[in-house]
Amino acid sequence: MPCFWDPISNKFCGYNWFFFNFLFPFFSLYSINSHLTGLKLVGEEEDRKEGMEEGKERAVDRVVCKNCGKSLGFQNSIKETEEKEEKEEKERGEKGEKEEKEKEEKEREERGKRKEKGKEGKEEGRKKTGKRNEKSGRKEGEKRKKV
Image: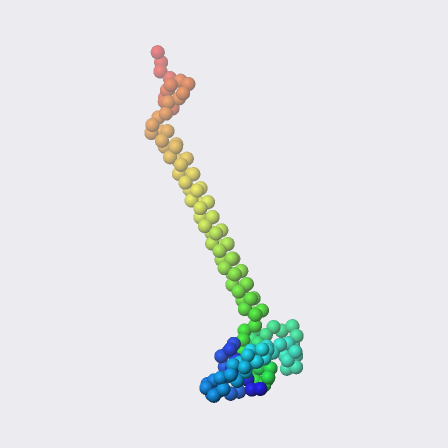
């Protein structure tokens, strides 16, 4: 049974899709169904045959038709895409943590400056207003009145 269309890579395998669809619609539907079940990813076994190392992870998997053995293109492996996503999430997390730390440091510095300004303001206010001493009733720095 010839197979002719790969839905994953949208490539033709063997015969023309339009020719079969026009002349043999039922046959083409049957062959598409058989082709969907006939796809396979070329895995570690064939890589070993080609002389690749077992521990090496491939960036791309070849999609091969089981019926005719024709290569239909390439598909990214699931492992690699997951690893890339995890690395991106880690980088985003690290950048976010750095930004948060910088913001906290800036806030601490601003708080310290505010406290210093507040203390200076209190001292200046006391000098200007000349608060009275609670016990004796005289201003700070004022001497006793002689009677």
